[in-house]
Image (cartoon, rainbow, N blue to C red; front, side, top):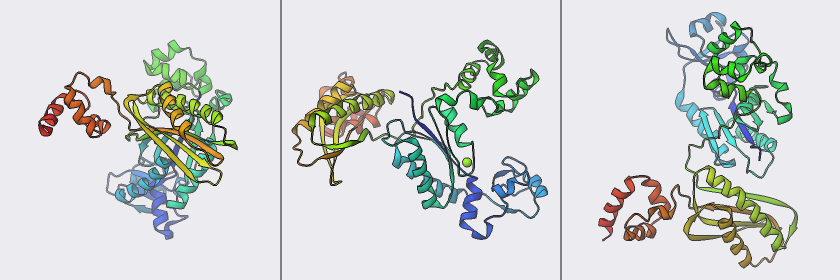
Amino acid sequence: MKRKIIHVDMDAFFASIEQQDNPEYRGKPVIVGGLSGRGVVSTCSYEARKYGIHSAMPMYMAKKLCPQGIFLPVRRKRYEEVSEQIFKILYDITPFVEPVSIDEAYLDVTHVDKNPEDIALEIKKRVKDATGLTVSVGISYNKFLAKLASDWNKPDGLMVITEDMVPEILKPLPVTKVHGIGEKSAEKLRSIGIETVEDLLKLPQENLIELFGKTGVEIYNRIRGIDERPVETMREIKSIGKEKTLEKDTKNKELLIQHLKEFSEIVSEELIKERLYCRTVTVKIKTADFAVHTKSKTVDKYIRFSEDIYEVAKGILEEWKLEQYVRLIGLSVSNLSPVKYEQLSFLDKRLVKVIKAGNLAEEINKRIGKKIIKKGSELLKDNK
Ligand SMILES: [Mg+2]
């Protein structure tokens, strides 16, 4: 299954916040950065970019280019506050968010039951409503292309790069647009007459390895639309799920069970990818009157394979008395743990009992690795 990756990048983040907070700065060249002698530009508004100012430029140079500009110090705390609002919106969409910086993130929306363009529009609208700011969003099937897409028509951009557009769309780009090729590498390439991705595509892999070492392989793949880097979530994942609005409302349990089977496979795949096990399975149903009902079951051992998850989900649905037509069905797993129950068997059985009485997942999360044993014996003492 091709992934669905979204890259979100705020437009001129610091400068836009200043313009939002101070209406008198709107429409004017605003430059945010270090104002002391050796300071550099952090961000500047699009109005300032017209004067040739860009981030990382020494501040004195920016002042020379645009003496009438509005020069402001960095208000880190304020920017972090706004960043938090934005990330809250992103985490609302999926737990699979990889923050790249204060104003940039990747989302893996492969299992979100909406098409990625709609998700992108939703992000843009919600960010605008919450903060007044615009964001550029790129959509593709890997991180490299998603980032390229978000950069495509900034500010306030929305761009999709699909498989059939590659590599044609990449060919005219300067090599510096390829993730992994910095200014230095670009110089190397220029010296052998390579300026664009189209030139780069002509180089065999061996040449790229000669030039860049291990990164050479990555670059070779990237410009051919291959980039397997996962979206790496920093946050503890509390649950994983999949749901679907049905094409037609139904009371047919067989049909609903079929969906649960499909969801079990998707959820299992995700658990394995995240190296997690689960203990609680929840089935969600939205009835024709839009009421949401959930039923959960917690099993004794940690599971992650689709058959096991399906077994529990199916059991829940079979016992469910459906009084109304169902318009949406969902399955999620929670009570997640990076270690499964069996791996604890080397410990004292009593310890297992003690931990089990509490929240096993929580205990293990706190005591991953060797610390389990030490802490475990302490725990036993406390509980004697
Ligand atoms: Mg940005």
